[in-house]
Amino acid sequence: MHEHDFKLLKELVEAPSPSGYEQPAQRIIRRELEPLADLLETDVMGNVIARIRADRDDAPRVMLAGHCDEIGFMVKYIDEQGFIYFAPIGGIDPHLVPGQRVHIHTARQPILGVIGKKPIHMIETKDRDTVLKLKQLFIDIGSSSRAETEELLAVGDPITFAVGLERLGGDRVTSRALDDKMGAYIITRVLRNLHARGASPVELIGVSTVQEEVGLRGGATSVYGIKPDVGIAVEVGFATDYPEMDKKDIGHIKIGGGPIIGRGPNINPVLFRLLLETARAEGIPCQVMAAPRATGTDANVMQLSRGGVATALVSVPLRYMHTPVELLSLTDLEHTVQLLTAVLDKIDNKAMFIPN
Image 1 (cartoon, one colour):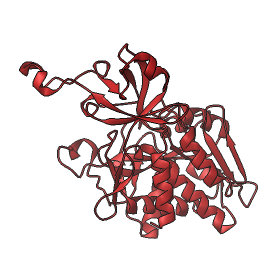
Image 2: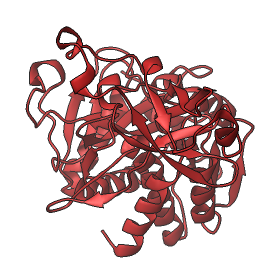
Image 3: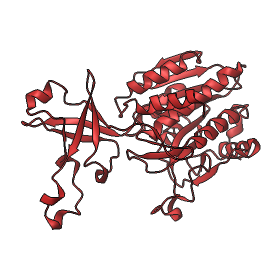
Image 4: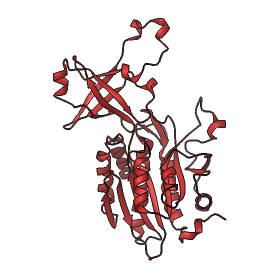
C-alpha cells in the first residue's frame, strides 16, 4: 500500500463517527471524492453519494456501498460529582468496556476520559466473574462536580474508544472502527481507479452509508433513491483463523486469504459467479463464505429495495470485530480494491443477472 493511501486510511479510521454522528468521517470522504465524481451529494440522512457517468447511455447502474459509522457510546447522565453515565451506540461487548480510555466528542474539542469501576480488591469473591452492566459503569474526566462537567460537554455527545490505527507485524494493522470505515475507504479507491481511466463501463455510484450499526438505515434510504441495477456491499467479515473461533459455524476464513465473497439467498447467484470468476481470471486470492440467511449488512436492504436489486457482498477478513483492537491485512484491502475495479468491466447489461 502506498504511503498516501495508508495515511488516508489512518485519517478516516481515526475520525470519530458513531452511528448518527458520522460527519467528521464523511467530510474526509467528500474531500477525496470531490475531484473524482461527476456528481457529489450528501442526502438528508448523511450518506455521501458520488456518481461517475458511464461512456454509454444504456449502461447498467452499479452501486457500491460501505458504511462509515462505527460503534460507540453516548452521554446519558451526569451525576453530582461530575461522573458521566453512558449508553451504547451499536453492538458493544460489556466485557471490554471497564478500564478503557475514551474520547468524548464535544462541540468544541475531544475530551479524554477513563471508564472506571470498583477495583477487584473491593469486589466480593462471588461477584468477581460477573460482567458489569454498562449502566453500572461511568466515565471520569477529572472534574469534581456536575457543573464543572457540564461546562465541558453535553448530554447526547458521542463517545469513542481513544485508540487509532497502528501497524503490527507484516502487513497487519489494528484499530477501532475498521468495521466498516475500510469499506468506505475501498469504495473511494475504486472510484479513483475508474476516474483515472477516463471512461467507465457502468454508471458507478459509490455511497459511504450511515447508521448501519443501528439498523442498516443509510443503506436502505440511499438504495431506494439511487435505484441501481446492481448493488455490492463492501464490508468486513469474521476471520476464523485464531483461537476459540469455530470454523464449523462460519467456515475457514483467514487473514491474508483475500476478500470474502458471500454466497446464499441474500446474494444474486450470477453476480456471485461473476465475482468469483473475475478473481480467478485476475489472479486475486479470494474466499467464499456461506450465508444461509440475511447477512445483517447493507446487502440485505440493497437486495430488497423496490423491485429487487442484483446484490453481492464482498468482505475483508477481520479479527476481533467490535473491539478497540480490530485487525486486518492491508494486502486483503488491496486485493479487494483490485477485485471490485476489475469486475466493473464485466458488467455490460442490466439483464445479465436474471437467474436461469
